[in-house]
Length: 250
Length: 250
Image (cartoon, rainbow over all chains, first blue to last red; front, side, top):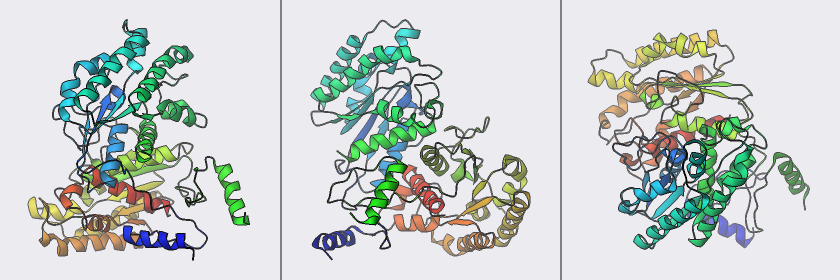
């Protein structure tokens, strides 16, 4: 038995259950601590548009409540975190609102973000900033999006200097019921803005567009995201898994 | 490089993405096929009481829909299966109804189970068969439960001889707002009936009571299941993970 193997077994015994494995099998590296950057007592806030909202109830807006967390990736990610970290006393909010663009987040940011004193803010915003130009005569451009988004992030860092920011890549999948190829180039500018701001504000970056792009190589987009904007149940799980992967690797 | 390692790499390349690991890390055994007993085109039905129902919408009762699947373990397990098996064209229903006892399942079994022609039926029933004796003057005993449950399973096997049955252990956690120690012995008889029938009908057995009993060793029951009957979001994830573990090891 090598020293490494001995140490591994010793640590496993301390950690708790070691999976039973035969000689033929290799085992999961149990030394990794899940969500090691999430501290005891942390408050985690999901913010965004309909994809985050996902039909959450908006009267009580309770933390850690299935109803108030909606039916999408925020609920699924919260469920996994609350299950995996029962001793961390986490408080997890969803305050996404359907139809929101970044300027609407700005309008309600005190009440729906800063006042909650979150330790983590995850933001997914941008698809309506482009989409509503096409269908609701909205006059914003990707420069409006950049200016407003930077304002939002600056205000956040001023009010909560230690907050951990998670910027999620806005996404749209062509050849679906609401999105066609004409989106790719102009919407790409909004995606580039989000990425630039993630770097500028030292935020975690969740590459949702890439996740969907990979998924539809094998299985039609209609399975993951029928209209190209709003994920199905399996698409939401895809997002939650990716979001968790980013936070876990933090 | 040993032959085993070579074979492993070859298979991994066929399966798809090989996780990137350093020399220090061991890797997950990727040769296991997830949910290998679930076939292409399978229909999976979740049946039961409020724990399964979990506020699902009951007008459309669509398969694979977040609304129609509720907010509990059925939704979480479905989400994981639909995400993991995108090529299997699964159809997943939730037809749990809050307050149901086993005789109420019997009453609606044609419409809400057999007519759906499921390949898998997962049943979680029993807590109300005991609870409603205490609080609603219900006259059933564990023998009524056994007779009705056996009738239900017989009818199922006669109508759908190839159906795969999953019997979930009904559970109740004492020292909570609705359940006390006085439940343990009498309710244990209902749990024993469910276990006996699982063996009799060669069903998969999902030991939910044990899962909660283990979870509360470390973290108070109020975190997982505040009233002792209805799980929190983290308790639902606990159930979904256990349910999936049983099906995966099938």
